[in-house]
Image (cartoon, rainbow, N blue to C red; front, top):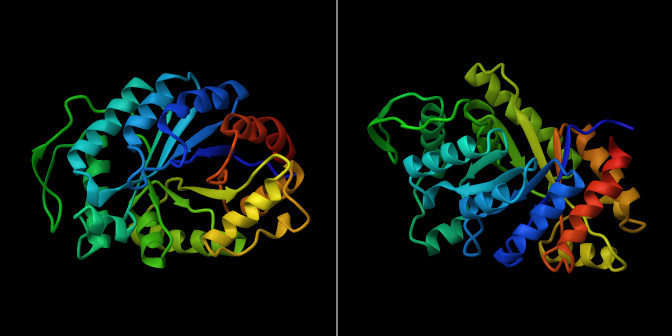
Length: 293
């Protein structure tokens, strides 16, 4: 068996926010490495949810994949990241991205060049988190003599949620890690890693770049049926390892395939209709993890 750097789970925003503390607590107590949240429109806020999950746990790392930059002022977002990093050192993983363009239009914040906006946000955000004083007059980001009064002792890595080639190259060039969604089969993961590496070469990056990949999973007597319905809902290709059913053994096989393709961290994503999210995170930690580490 291979060793996966980290194995985690998602708390999907289809679950009511008030369920998060119990799920985060179950993940923490089970020894799960990471719990990831989404800031999907118009469910629940990523930063508020991350703060609640971090405050109720003592070792769980909490990621947000991702914060849509069109909806957020870069200075305020960076202040929030710095605050969480100071309160919970090394346990918060911020991720940013373009956001769903239909939702961005619905919220009145869609921009003409999402790539330019993301690039400008990454440059300003990472500089501010390093404790630098920033003045910039970009197409979308304008800052005048801005510095954090309470920068983190160590800048947390900033991840980018990406799917397209240009976004993946940008992530390699300008971010510290990349998040791929659950439609990413091993061939997509390998191609993403190659595109990220192209961006890293362009940017002269030699530091570590983490690749986090979501993976559909489920547990319980109806796990296979729920996975099939989830894949059909999003018109996604099947997960080959699940052809004979979804179980800890087949989920572990799917995790190994994604890890072999280049994922550093695999985050298991429950179905939107998951009836027992606390049980799901325990399943990931107690049944799947021993089969892949």
